[in-house]
Image (cartoon, rainbow, N blue to C red; front, side, top):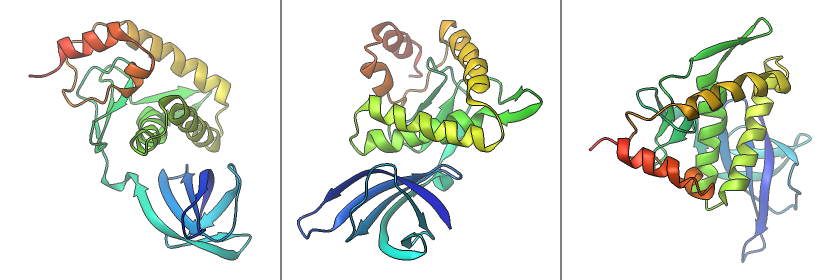
Length: 203
């Protein structure tokens, strides 16, 4: 069973608690129905169908989103290094970004850390009508949990990746995907980047 951290809860008209939770190990986003109240940050366990706390069943999974049906593209220029298609089926990673880096002797896939553990999670939340700043905050937390699970210090990773992100942002875009979701750029009011993306998008 996987651990899932609750990121939101609400009660429906039938007085059933509706929880939303995310697992970082293999990014999975689930909707839970339970008669028990929980707070944000509570860690629960699920086998994909039922949900447990300390071994006791407390609810069921009513919806699941996973990384299994997602494809990765490294064929384009992406201003913010990572991004996603409007329909959420493609995760984009800038073609100039190294697919793997080494931090203090430990190798790490940026496709996994940035693509699957940040961009994908962020897109799930944006599509679920969360405000972009909160979606980005949760995605960064999932990315951090994943990186630290590999025995890499977040500070070291953040420093190394931060330099790559800055270098990538400074590059002029030549080929942008036409279906790139511009939510992060609009939330940041980055009009210059939006113009550059549109000017370099495929016909």
